[in-house]
Image 1 (cartoon, one colour):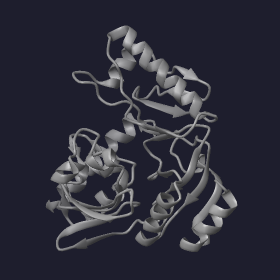
Image 2 (cartoon, helix red, strand yellow):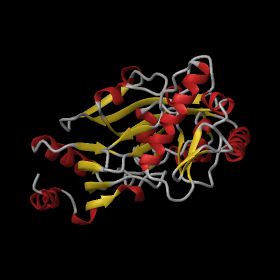
Image 3 (cartoon, one colour):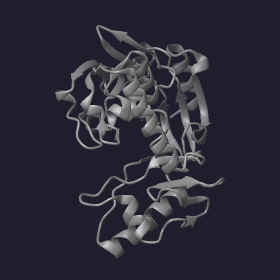
Length: 304
């Protein structure tokens, strides 16, 4: 791949200020780790997203969607090809009694918008740090609620840059999975259907969940959120805690002493530290309890 040629061609279809070359992805991930992207594109319109996908497809250039970098580890070797970050597509508005949210908006902001509109059903999302696109992609959930309970439809792009509208049923939303993830679709916007509610009750619920999150999660440190999926019949955090792993550290990555399901960056962690600690936790829990912990966090990119 001729980088100079690629950057010049990208500038023909994307505004130049929305393209960065050899960009450190640690600036865009919640763990503050990760190597460089060959090209980083930060589109502000659906057309720019579509143009980027079509260009990558036509020229056989790898394309990666980063979301807002919350539930993600990018390896220290970085990502080849083009990385798309949709944070600038962040509009949230009402249409026909439904909430329309673009993929780059945070799901927390959608839950706050629902409160302003006196709509119930999105309270659970007030503590999820991801983007709308990421939340729909993995059917994010917390405190007994999940995206599948409140979404009505989504507009996505397939790998050929074709626009599709998917109903909730067509999205095949299951525990931390969806058709969108399986087909590598890119979420452009989601339509949510919360129901009218009592604003005082909605706010009380959100305040309660925010308190729970702040008191139990190590929000004062960079982290990728909940690292492991819940194994059937168990809680990942409890298994890790009972294995005596809280405080375990490799390099700058540490199993949180506040919540064992989180791995924090104490200051100078690399993605390699994170991945080594994840493996150590998995091996230890497997040896102690015979339970295989599967990562919830998405791990992408190349080894250094």
